[in-house]
Image (cartoon, rainbow, N blue to C red; front, side, top):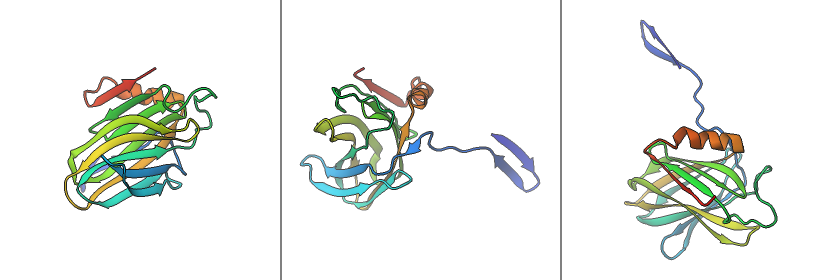
Length: 180
């Protein structure tokens, strides 16, 4: 990034890229209570890979995803989405990276409002059949009425996924969990 000083202040020039992957449209996102698994909301990601949940009441919630298999996924006939996975969560940047036999993904959390300590707890729990697995990606606690959370889901190539993991693996704000 270049910083150019001029008489009216400072102008910033550069390329700001917020997401290194391709948006995943058609992913199904479920917001459920924890405990009890009561469905609170459901959305399908649009062309930009995003979904927003707002006007959330106080309580604890889990977010589940059903993701269409990536074109170049790791999945073969014998592996389910639960077989092997790698999950990384950067608490300051609020990004969740996960790799499983369905592919390589990045979830960016934005517009976070009224979450307890702005905290999202990453996870990777699967349920369902091998071909139609739901993945619980996080748990969060809303500490007041009108909580809000937006999600942007992107698919990454293997190379971009590994680059993101390497970029943050030594960062104290990044937690990695792997079964590979």
